[in-house]
Image (cartoon, rainbow, N blue to C red; front, side, top):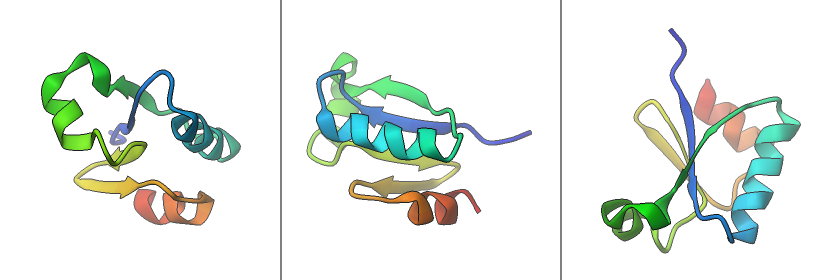
Length: 73
């Protein structure tokens, strides 16, 4: 079973859109979690979004395709 790739962000975050474009360029479909809907996530990720999570590892913005591939390896 393949681990889920999660992108934490908010709907109005232009950096989150850029992060999503990086994932899209690699053909990676991530589960998008809007941290604005959860106080705990907002506290945890509020100043770090977008954050990409895979298994037990996180990658904070800015990241590029190479960094994403290292995260997923």
